[in-house]
Image (tube, rainbow, N blue to C red):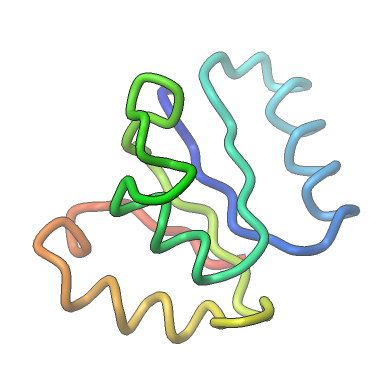
Length: 93
């Protein structure tokens, strides 16, 4: 599966995504961020996400639209401006 970045501030949604991945037997890394600003920090590898051995570049982004600080629509707009943004598979939740 590789690395999946889940951007969601709802604990129930995070629980069910983790459960679904485990039930499907998917191996890999599922990293959770809670708001749009954390998505950007993770994707740029900055602040607490600077260590790429611990926080590898994601192969897939699962993006909630309703998040604090910066919503999913704003993240999508930002992704369009990034060289890697159009290459990163993104699923909107």
